[in-house]
Amino acid sequence: MSVAPALPADPRLQRIDQARHLVMVEGRELPPAVLGERRDWIARSWRRCLQRGRRPQDKVAFDCVPRSALRASRERNQALLAAASPLLDELARAIARTRYFAILTDAQGLVVDVRGAVDHDDRRAHCIARVGVDLSEASVGTSAISAALTELQPVWLHRGEHFFHDTSIYSCAGAPLFGPDGRCVGMIDLTGIEAAERPELAGLAAQAARRIENALVLRHEHALLLRLNWPGHALGGDDDALLCLDADGWVRAANRAARTLVPQLAAVGAQVHAGEVFALAPQRLFDHARASELLDTGPMELPLWSGLLVQLRARRGGHELRVPLASARSRMSLQQLEDALVRQAVDTARGNVAEAARALGVSRATVYRKLGARPQTRK
Image (cartoon, rainbow, N blue to C red; front, side, top):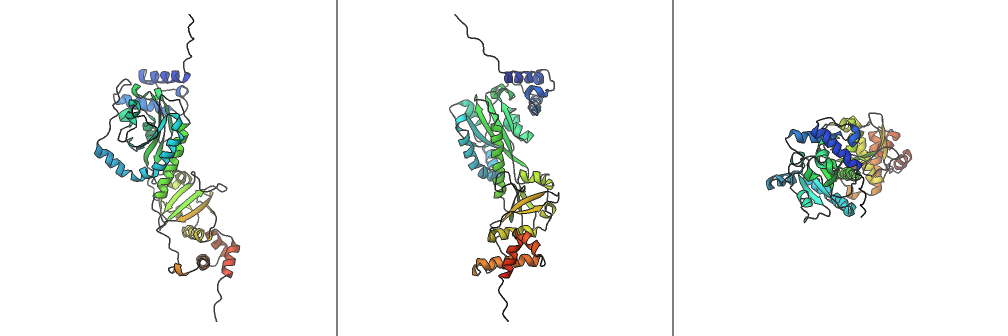
């Protein structure tokens, strides 16, 4: 009787076992070559679990928080839930055939929404895919959820990289979510149960997080929305920098792309005025928005104080649709509104047609043409 040859051991699982022994048994630092470059955060999480007095063989309860705590979290995160809902549906469709599902948590690791093909007859799925379950590191140990919320970066975690044996059946990708003020407000998690390893899901989670963050900014009350990108890069994509200004020109909301582009916004809660960002009078941004509404102009190019050149499109908020000199707008024709806007821009620029054209985002020829269309004064 022949015996089937033994299958070779998975080298990745062998490295994970080696890493666990080095950190959890010998208490040694983890060499980068064991789990890969820039994955030392896994060992940091393991050590935190050990410092809490936990052991890998301990049972995980997957406890739900009290109803009052869940209700308070959902009330605090109404904007996040509304912004994330359509994106979670898209994620669920994208991963439907992979045996993974999507989880949304708040900044403390509390599950606030779940989407996808969750088999609640499978206790392993039901344990984590319930609204109200505490999936923080203190509760369930090392996971993509705790790692994303602690490291504030997209992560991929495979089975044995979890701290507890009870969670070693899960493979998961996660990405943190940042609110309009730059603070972490939660995370997106994609989890599979004894499913094929799919580290590419970390990129999908990061992309979904970016879109949710943009939706949060777009929902923020604003007098002016600025959409920026580098020259030659088509505006309107998910990678645009988004800034919301109030009527006085102060930045009230920004996405991560904007905080990367504008160093003044890097600090959480920083109070930044548009005049500190753009090398032009902030009023010209409002002028450009009005011109875009009336003349359907393209994006304008302008320098930042850093010296970098960007292209920008401005749009006014719904509550700021007033047009100077047009209190009787309903009685004016579109041509009259356009002429009035051009004349105002020229007056603001003290007769400098080139400067007025830049403010409006149009050519000088357009400004001259509109000035030429000005009605003659009757004698």
